[in-house]
Amino acid sequence: MNSHLKSLLVFIAAFAVMAAFPPSGLAQAPVDRDVAYDDKHLSQCVDVYLAKSDKPTPAVIYIHGGGWRGGSKKGVPGWLMRFVSDGKLSVVAVEYRFTDVAIHPAQVNDCLRAIQFVRQNAEKWNIDPLRLGVTGGSAGGHLSAYVALHDDVANAKSTDPVEQQSSRVACAVSFAGPTDWSLLSSIAHGHPAYRQLIGYVPGTPASELKAELVKDVSPITFVSEDDPPVMQVHGDNDDIVPLEHASNLHEQLRFKGVTSELVVIPGGNHGVAGAGDQVSTRAVQFVQRYLLAP
Picture 1 (cartoon, rainbow, N blue to C red):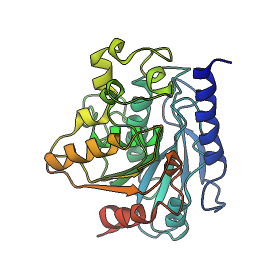
Picture 2 (picture 1 turned 180 degrees about the vertical axis):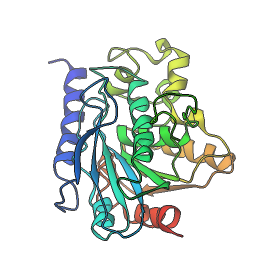
Picture 3 (picture 1 turned 30 degrees about the horizontal axis):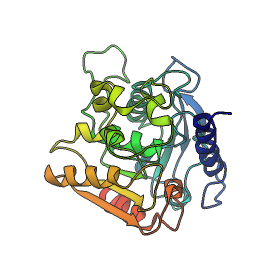
């Protein structure tokens, strides 16, 4: 087994474990499972965890990690499930196409459509369509930041009612998510997933990556003054997604006047992406402030 394949398998396996055993240990079955939001591939579906409430609740769209090639929507972090149990917000967990099915931008397109799909079904699920947040770790952190910063993809002229819905969110929380592929040129990124996402084989020199792909896959590209509040939680000892991904995006958001919070976990490695209780306290406060507050 070559070293690139071995490192990818280790990368995916680590996140499969996190997905299978959510940090809280809270067991709660989704009200709706495997609900299709598109028909291009069987993976395009969501699980819906509904809060019990007499009035529409906010909702968080959860996007799992796994190198854009593994993981599962089943591993919703405990801090989110506690909100559901307390009747404060609902959670919609998204599955999306992996890179062995389709490369970027398939993953972000799926997540953008999933947000539109939630809005289309907001009344059915007793969700407030104006109060949607998004969160995820690692690859899910990348996708969360991407959809939060991307322009609205709503198409009022479309005959598809889902496409007519807004894809904008009220806030985003990214745990150890990559944000800036230009860093591949200056910092070693050993895992092959970065290159596979944009259609390159592992080990391809950064200098050979097409500039337009590097730009388009990077959430930092889409920063603008009208972006929602963003929190990033990142370990300063992360050798899979270096801290510079978070700090660069944080600086750019602040420069544009966007509310941005960067929570650095001292000594934290890429396990921060699992969004366990020991690293999610500030995220809970952030969601309370920007999604739950009247």
